[in-house]
Amino acid sequence: MLWVNLGEQDVTLAERLNLENQILTRDGMSQYLINYYQPGNFYYIYGNYVSNSGRSYAIWSRIPDYYPTVRPQVYVHNPNPLIGFGGVSINSYKLSHNMHTLENGSNGEVQICHWRQNRWHSGITLNKVMLKAMLWFEAFEQHLATGQPIADFVSTMKET
Image 1 (cartoon, rainbow, N blue to C red):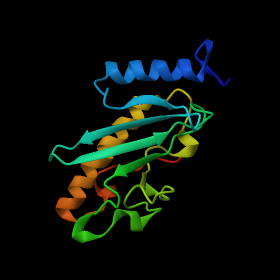
Image 2: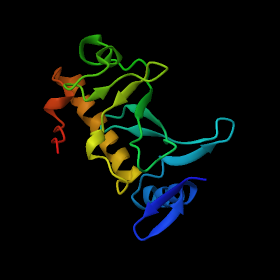
Image 3: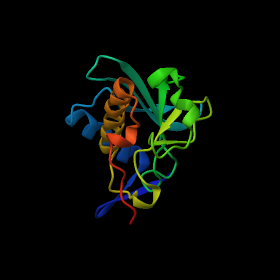
């Protein structure tokens, strides 16, 4: 059983994720609830985001075994490939500062850069991660409209 320190008390990972689901629901993000995948023995968060322009994107993240100490990887599950301005696949950028992407997932999905690893800490909750993903999608929509890189619409987190 994995234990997580939550302020003054220790809680199991399952208890922490239950609290995370409550926070997501409280913050109006119940489309992103955490589930348990029994055959693989892991937790994941999955949900759909509908942008201001009406496009739908599916977000997927396997919750790391040592969450919240370890930063979760967030992927664009659908559409895959993710087609950007001028018909260029965002998947082809892989690790890109300009597009705020990291290496693609095992199925070629775009991985969204949402938090610097060296800035990640256990006090960050998944509602903040999902909010950053939603901001990334809105910046992606601006990229679709203008051809400018996502970095022009989303600030880069400063080094520590």
